[in-house]
Image 1 (tube, one colour):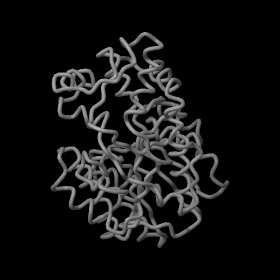
Image 2 (image 1 turned 180 degrees about the vertical axis):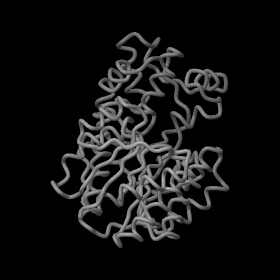
Image 3 (image 1 turned 30 degrees about the vertical axis):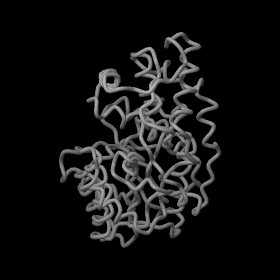
Image 4 (image 1 turned 60 degrees about the vertical axis):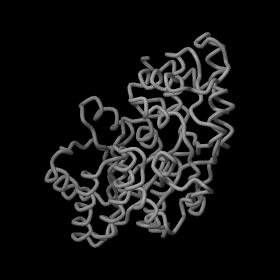
Length: 351
């Protein structure tokens, strides 16, 4: 019998878009698609995508275990909380019990973030850091003690914990890293991203787009549709029992390439000036006082503002292409469509 699948985070930007495209998988490749929900309205929404709503108490290890085992779930795509160091362990242990009962392979995909492979998390940035690097697990373990921000230390710990727990309980694990994702979400919930929203939100509050770093640091980017097709390529490969690499060899970055933050700042500034939302389109380097104002606008401490809208990430995607993923949108597309992105953000934001 084909396996049962659980997706968490279906009301989110990435999870909702994934749910909206699950129908593209071959008919009969899985038995039941479950989507974790918290409310009756969410239950109605996921049902429209052909998913069976599932509720469980994430604060209860027993509830997690019982629900996964009772529904014979063999594949979990976890798209909530990239610093989760508790629920992931309980889910992986429950999958191990399912495997013990039916003898089939079980799989756990954890959604992290490119920030945890960047300067913000103490990752190497002196050259490309490929998602196929055989030492990635070792590199991430080293980052736990060297990460400059507590959130990053917890995040890389969460990534490594997924890998080590999967190995301990013979569960195949995958660490999936979105980056700067853009474009309109296609699910029933959140329609917009995070990083591009933060740039617009700060600029609107300060009436100017500010740069954060010296020079022209770069960051990987990905259209939400391409991010989704990588999720689906991984899932389809699992359903076809293909060997795609897992555990210490199971890192995936969803990205078609990188762009300079400055190019993104300037494109957004031009769009916002056209709408008279900022004084002029000139991008200015933020000083210490400005960082405080940016932090206030974003609702975060001053020291965390650069983490929101800057930094250097040389994380480079190769793994997805090795398993047949082909991104449709070039990295420059985010610059070319910045005006559309700003319009989308303004339409769906409350700031």
